Amino acid sequence: METMQFESILLPGIEAKRPIVIAGPCSAETEEQVMTTAKQLKDRGVKIFRAGIWKPRTRPGAFEGIGTVGLTWLKRVKNELGMYTATEVATAKHVSEAIKYGVDLLWIGARTSVNPFAMQEIADALAGTDMPILIKNPVNPDLELWIGGIERLYNAGIRKLGVIHRGFSSGDKKIYRNLPQWHIPIELRRRYPNLPMFCDPSHIGGKRELIASISQQAMDLNFDGLMIESHCDPDCAWSDKDQQVTPDILDYILNLLVIREGKQTTESLSELRKQIDELDDGLLEILAKRMRVSREIGTYKKEHNMQILQTARYSEILEGRINQAVKFGIDADCMQKILEAIHEESVRQQMAIMNE
Image (cartoon, rainbow, N blue to C red; front, side, top):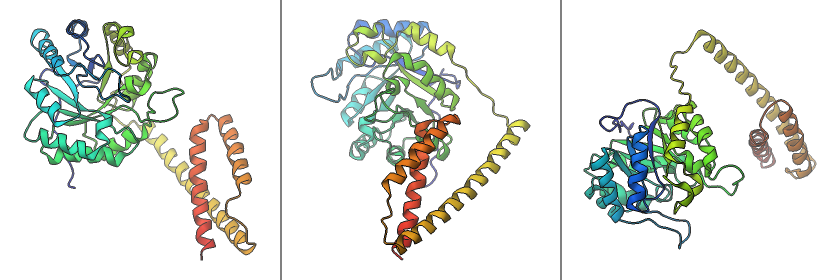
């Protein structure tokens, strides 16, 4: 489709200053909890209050949101505290209810953005409105699916669009609840440099002690804003208590952030980039030579009726090269991905020779 042109999602009175902060509890639980948290956040400079009204849960039986009554509490936050309000929508009915109660900003969650049917339903419900909409990445790491959701809303006439990076589901829960896979939002930013981008460190980390470091990473990658879950009493929260922080702790985290706004390319940086270009050229030459040797090996295997995949040899290469890379200060997981990609291309070239 033609290049998408986005309008500013900044609400009146919100400065275009990084980070734009959206904060509030994972779920609206009681009127008192909502008002107490909102008041504490307002006192610390937060202007956009978020709270989940409908909560799509992984398994039934967990707290699935207070429902429409919670929208009346958000209306109180707006009317009495002068804050903007935001909530998640997953159906056309959610959209109509949120609009009816004057919610200022909507976001679409990861369990919804993964479903093109649901995204189209929401896009149809939003047609003709002028509300800012943020789209979380789908649960699985699929950039095209994320872009498809953006396009569906854009085709419905929505121009005040942005995205939220909340990480991707994985069986690996050693550190993060959802793996950041930063290269995916980086590629999205490369394709659509004017698309506002928020980071949700609460869902990426899954633990409150990770929020500060993830937030800093997002700022270093030039994200526009942060959506952080904050609760007046996180340990008693009805959902996702481990990833929520008090407004005091949120304020502490935000004050610790180092915001690097430098836009100018210095002479020194230009020289370093030139070095990177030269080194990349060298890497490509070496890779080309390696593939030439791989093709020679493929010819030998064909002539001697040997199988392409030699598992013992591949394991030996992986282990040896990864250990060597670690000694050079390169992350083991990064090196493994590089070696797997090189091996996959080597196998492809040898298979082409085998099938000639």
